[in-house]
Image: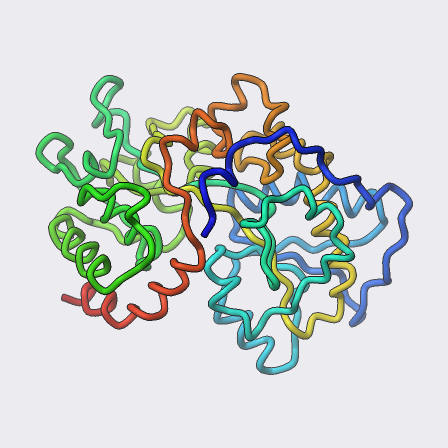
Length: 351
């Protein structure tokens, strides 16, 4: 299980950067550019600016950045043997759910992975940045001094009235509902039948007030800023980005569900060696520090977080002051409940 300890910043030195300017990598195969796929929006922009563009410029390798990540499309590519993607950002649960369509990572070619805690590395995926699923709101509906600060508050429609938004899959909702039911963070896992039924029972209480079950990270900030929703779960990077545009939105890391963005290589990609080099660069001190400067999604390397300014620290999941109030998402457990209880979740959605 990924523990809170793994999020706390440490003074461990970052592994030496081996992707230095002028390094040579295998030519891109299949007579096409290297293709990187991510979710779009603030995350794709951050990954392009911090990872892909600098790597491309330093090594003369053309990188095509595209979005969104689509699991069904990735699976279809691998099944057909016509793999057009070389590196993909996914949610951590897919590293375990989608193992059959993912290539094993060659960690001998990713020395910078040595700077990561073990919880951020798996046989077929690796974390490269951090974010969270958080509670967000419309500031005209809830001005300063009257804002929800927990999932208990999110469920309290009397104190905090108005339409809600929640993520369409069971992902995140399992954790949020159990926290709203009063379970402590250390009681959320392991997943059991009883805990699943408790979570769904709690969600049934709120369901009449859930106006939108969102499936795209762009929806919560848009719907909150327009006033269509009063409250919603949301991805931290999306809310940070829209607040920079002076939108009437607010959010808190309190009671948030902390996670990482993971990179995987589709099985059958003709550019696996190049993918390892890109991953290694993304984990370098140079690239991780660029994430600090962008201020949207945070570093996964703890020693880089230590360099953050007081202003930058406000929006970083890995700082002790933020992570101490949050639940760290256990991706293996999330993969378990997402698959084992999918039919039960569908029944709830249709009921």
